[in-house]
Length: 598
Image 1 (cartoon, helix red, strand yellow):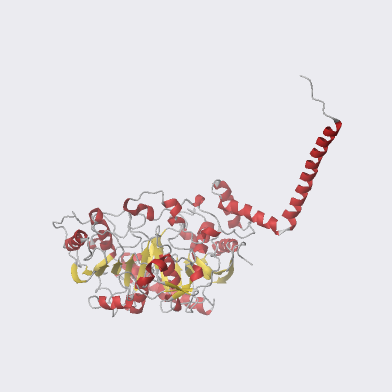
Image 2 (cartoon, rainbow, N blue to C red):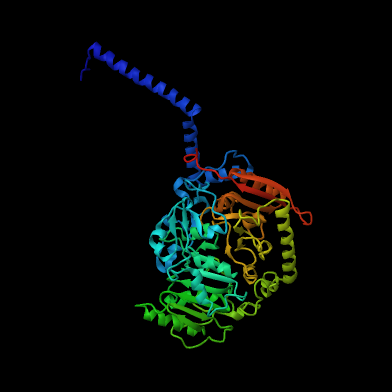
């Protein structure tokens, strides 16, 4: 085939066109270089690249290298912020992940945590317009709308007194579906049948709590109510409760025991919680029975109590309670009140649900990722005096050594020494370290390694409530905390906690490295970087962290604190304390992601 000969003019035009493209490309690359090096665009693109690295879970080795650099103090820039749509991210209650799971017994609404390598290594940003929360006690009645701008509950439940929008605030009239006139009047009715006054009752559990107005009103009665609900279609009900300063956390009564020890609550309450207590051979009622102290009170308000078209469910509920020898004290319209018996003598008996006592070997207080049982926990399997009426009244029970502490060797002496130690330490925190305990700046407090609850007991006179966390791999002392009239949960700190971002004003931890260390070993089960990123997620902007540990651990913590944008100060321990501890006090800076800062 012959070649095609082009006219000279056309050939030159083609050559010039190619030259133009090469020249333009060269100048374009030069311009891009100057833009990247000398303008904010370069910073923005670099930040995007770093964020892609931080958010990437495709290469665990890359993540491990970054964690190691942060621990060693060789990563000199702060960990980047997560995307703006992650302001309410809860790793273990992520609807995008959990919606793929089984619906049977609401399994998909329970905790399901990603592996550490699959968890984004980034800091949760506040929502646009976020403000430092309204201080307690004003927060009980109003919060900033901008801090959680979700109107779904206000739109759907406003007529029932749950909450409503008013200018820059959400306000909370104190109502609920079953007490539209307010929780206070509802509680007054309960007082006719239950000794709510006088200190006989102290710890309560509110199941399916809404925005926790019941728990908020019970505070005036000196009853400490731990409210829980799942992350559900109402969106953010627990987030609203915590923003108000009411004890609450995210949980679902599904396939597992709730993370509490046996016989801990003086009073269990359900107001239209819609838990099918008699389903699955009364498995859910049995779990409530495990948590309720002997001689404690159970209140169920709403369906199925005398509810239209739920006659069978109401009959079955009464039959289950009767089979366990609960005394039906009163039925007031749609509210039923029972009292639990003191001993095991009721079972075995003939009942349609096949209820039987658990084996003697069953530990009813084991409740971390433990599947629900279809047998009734034996009161006789837990040693000690813990029935309502036999434990001291509040507030005496706060400082009296609980009998369940005596199960531990030298339990009495350890308890007394622990109580004295924490009084001394808290005094030092306030006077020498200037921690703002006792001021309106601190309301929601977490103790990540609570043991006997000595820290919480030492600040009980302050306007705070404390979530006492007993690590699941440590000795099970949570029952002692409840016997003192305090509240808390089991948790493993190699997993994220079941709460929303920005929910605690103060996080306290003594022995932080022990939370992630394998029992009986010097090897860590997970990274202190991931743990502190999780602490940052839970902590409110301008919130405080107190960490006690050895000087070597505190040095490592200080390096990680820089990466999570905390301002830190390291202090010597109290003069009266033994050991090699140092104390790090940190403040979470109120930062905003680059896209929203001005």
